Image (cartoon, rainbow, N blue to C red; front, side, top):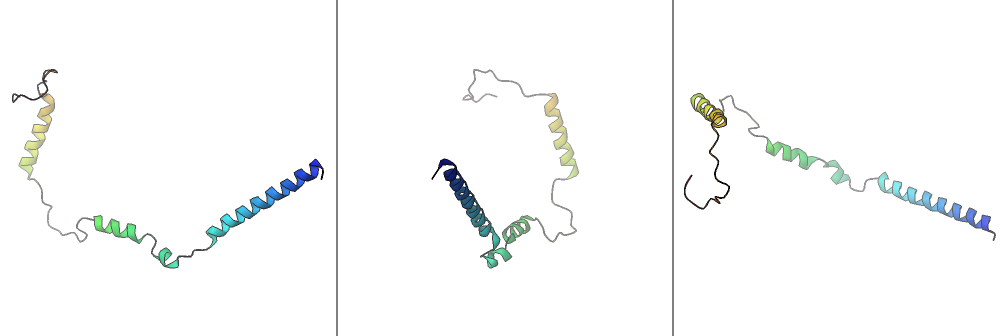
Length: 100
């Protein structure tokens, strides 16, 4: 067998192997062998979303929370904390003493 014949034979063998491999890969995706599982696909996600919903059947009652006066005072204290920053401690203090 001469060198060009060997190359031609090797080329045909590689082509046949590539075609066989591609066919096997495609055959694996062709049909589902789990019809029961496929019919339930996504159920777990839908159930998880439904369980995370707070008050699925919402009532017309106002939500529980803080009243207006307390909320206004809290907001004022929050804004004031930016105007008057907390005093800085010495960098050599580790925080083991009881002083502020």
